[in-house]
Image 1 (cartoon, rainbow, N blue to C red):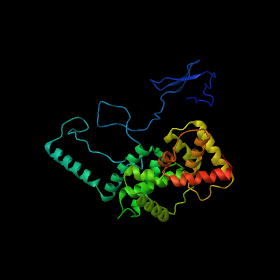
Image 2: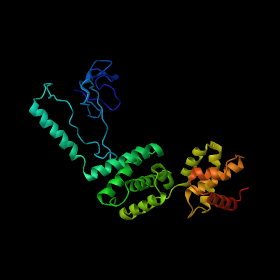
Image 3: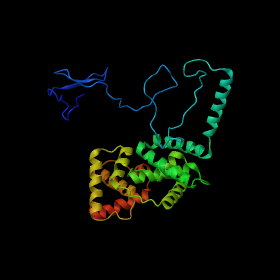
Image 4: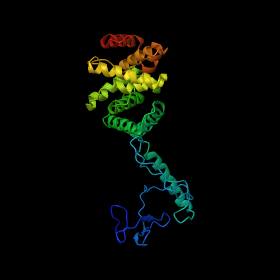
Length: 299
C-alpha cells in the first residue's frame, strides 16, 4: 500500500487524492490508485447504551467540574441480558441489589460535598458567564481544598466562590468579590476570608488585575460606545506611563477613566451608575477621577 505524500497527491502519478466518505477509501482521482482502504475513526470512542435505537456516539468528556469526573457507570433498569433474553427472577433480584449498592457507593461524604459544590459552580458559570477553562481551574482548586480538609467547618458556597474568584484572578478575567457574593447570595466578607485562606494554604501568587480589561466590563454594562472606551483606555495608558496607578484598585481606575471620557463627550452618565456597574463607591470614583484630571492635566 502506497503512502500519501505531504502535498496530498498520489505518489504514482501526482494526481489529486480524494476520499469516499461512505467507504473510507482514499484513492487517486487520475489513475485510480487506492492509497488507504479503510480510514480510521478519529472521533471520540463514546456510545450511548441506554437507547438501543440510537447508534450515534454521544456522552461528555472527562471534567473536573463533575463530582465523579464523568467516569461513573450506571446499571440500567432493563431486565434483559446482552442477547435480549429476559432475566430469571433470581437474577433480577441480584441485579436489583447491585443497583442499590452501586447507588450507595456513590454517596460518600466527599462525593456529597463535591456534588453540592459543583451544582453551585454550574450556577456561577451561567450567572457570571464564565468560560470552561475558568470552571475547570475553580474545580481543581476546590478539589485540592477538599482533599486538604479545608472545607470542614466552612460553608461550601463560601469556599467555592473563593476558588472561582481565584481562578478568575489567575486567568485575568475581570470579576469582583461582589459579583460572586451577589451570584450566590452570600456575604462578601466571608468570600474574602475564604479567598485569603486559599492563598495562604496553597501559596498562590495572583497577578494584578489589568485595568484595561475592567473598562470593557463596565462599558458593556452601561452601554457605552467604542469611542468612549478608546478615550478611557488612552487615559489609563497615560496614567500607567506616569506611574499614577500604583496601589490603586483597577476597577476604580477603570470607572474613573470612563467617567472622564463621558464628561468629554457630553454623555449624561452619573457616578451612581458607574458605581453600580463597577462595584466601587461613588466617593472612590470621584477621588480617582479628580486625581487623573490633575495628574494628566485634563479639562
